[in-house]
Amino acid sequence: MQLTQLLPHLLILQSSSRAFARKITFPSVSGYQSQERLFGQGGIDVTTGSMFAGLTTYANLPYVHCLAGEGEEVEKYDIAILGAPFDTGVTARPGARYGPGGIRQGSRRIVPDEWDIETGENVFLDWAKVVDCGDAPLTFLDNTVALEQLDESHKITSGRSGNSSEYPFPRIVTLGGDHTTTLSALRSTHQKWGKVSVIHFDSHLDTWDPEVLGGGISHYAGINHGTFLHIAHEEGLIRNTSIHAGIRAPMVRPKGDLRNDLRCGFQIVMARDIDRIGVSGIIQRLKSRVGDSLVYISVDIDVLDPAYAPATGTAEVGGWTTRELLSVLDGLRGLKVVGADVVEVAPIYDNPGETTVLAAAEIVRSLVGLMVNEPVKI
Ligand SMILES: [Mn+2]
Image 1 (cartoon, rainbow, N blue to C red):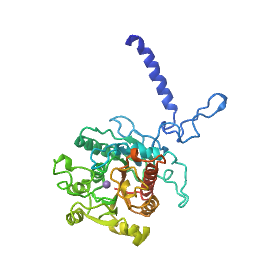
Image 2: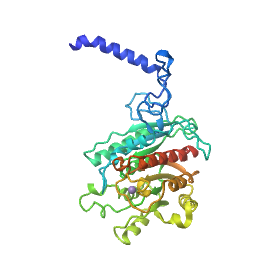
Image 3: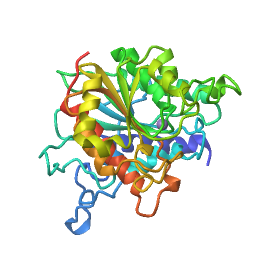
Image 4: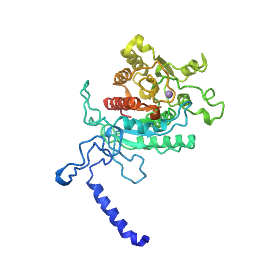
């Protein structure tokens, strides 16, 4: 068929799909959050009733095209889930580029109309409109370009005006990606909110000097998932009131690593401290360290023991349980959290029970809960 013959058909298709799109109550992708009900023959409702229908967004939340071009109308939101499929900054097992998809998969039984049995709260039906923006488009062939793309994606996503009239400043929870992606998130957070204290849940320090980790090969190689906090400090993005939690991985230099870590503005809570001071002791140390400052929370899934999170690139034994981490996170209520992430989830190493992605999905819910619990003004 000639194009000229095809044109009338295309026009009909276009106009009819537009008319159809108007009928759909936003969102149209998540199976659970309903579109307008559609009844089939015999009056059977074919649009509602299953959390497994449609495409998978985080927690069945509405999808918003946050990276739409200029002039396109974008649904307003207060908290955005943004995927960062990047894993070429790792020093061991790759695979975290599939993390965003894996975490969404792990979240498919989380639905927006569930109430927490301990608190009675529902973080998705509170004041904040929480949406899933999908993944940032990142090249997998050039790390420098990919991180610039992520910098921009973050800035665009957080730069839109929020849905709430009282707190119109969208915040982002990033789904990694390897830990290098946190650098982009910190750059964007700094541009909007200024310097932040970082609460860094990880088995590794990640403040390594690029000259020590990778930089001996090339400048380019020095920017990776073990050096991003050093670079964030160098770029002046973070306060010297930051703190690690869950540390247990070995040092590269016996004293140099710790001195360097201190210079980057960090204190350390060891993984085994939890046996001494308990969950409440950990919460207290984290809270007193960051005080009243604005906070960014980064959760490397390898803070958990490999028994609870096998699907990660640089697993270290002797970590926290999922319950301990969730209790610590939920105990941070009241802090002014302006950005957060869950990184280093590499679903290929998960087991058939999806241990890691289930944990990661629940951690994301806790992080969203902290943001909802404490609205922040610029
Ligand atoms: Mn890390």
